[in-house]
Length: 134
Image 1 (tube, helix red, strand yellow):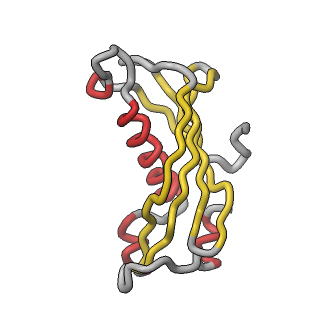
Image 2 (cartoon, rainbow, N blue to C red; image 1 turned 45 degrees about the vertical axis):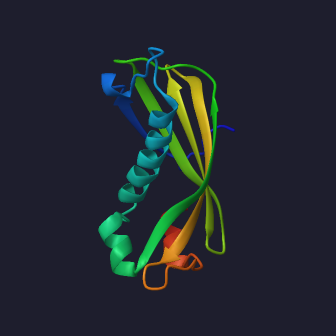
């Protein structure tokens, strides 16, 4: 799946702290980067953690599915692309891709659930949030 035109992208350099005992980026780092890409996307549409708290809402991960297609190494520049693929009720499916020089290294699909901070229960995604990610 190619990222759509409205995908949020950002570039970053792989730090040595993300290199594992095999000499490449470890799987835990890829998961963290998936979460960071989602956070950066939300910030870019004006929905940082403070904004969500003000709305009384918070996203939590229900499931990550990650496929590793290539390795990344310290000092390399990568591009992350992420977008909301679908929203239904309280659930959002987000896609994330990582590239080096145009080559796909990793793809992830993350299921997020929107919770009410007051109740801790899932809550339907309001239309004003839907519009931000369109």
